[in-house]
Length: 102
Figure 1 (cartoon, rainbow, N blue to C red):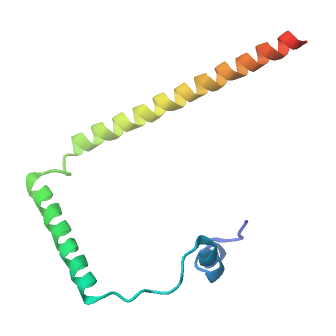
Figure 2: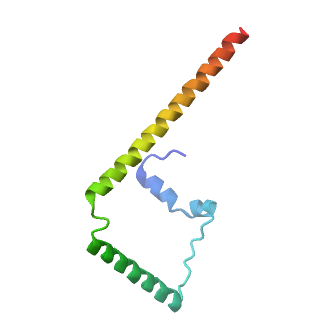
Figure 3: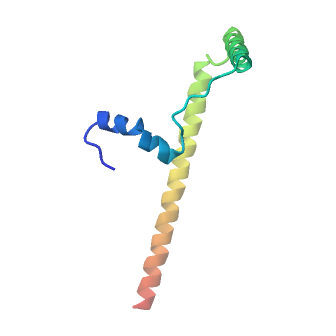
């Protein structure tokens, strides 16, 4: 589908037809008191864990995060390079195979 602008795209994403095709019902289930309590307890625990990380200084080590990101980017670059090499190899094999037939 092509949309003329972002507003029409958002209208489509929020339409009942789109939800039906995705298998999502538009009905909101009513939460029980027990489910709400469980959710609140989970959120409180999550907040405590984040506070502990801050106290320990975990997650704030910029150099560690930069090094990890650099490692990930280098891995992606290596993977792309390998993929290109494989594609060139396959093309060369096809070209050699086609020249043998002629």
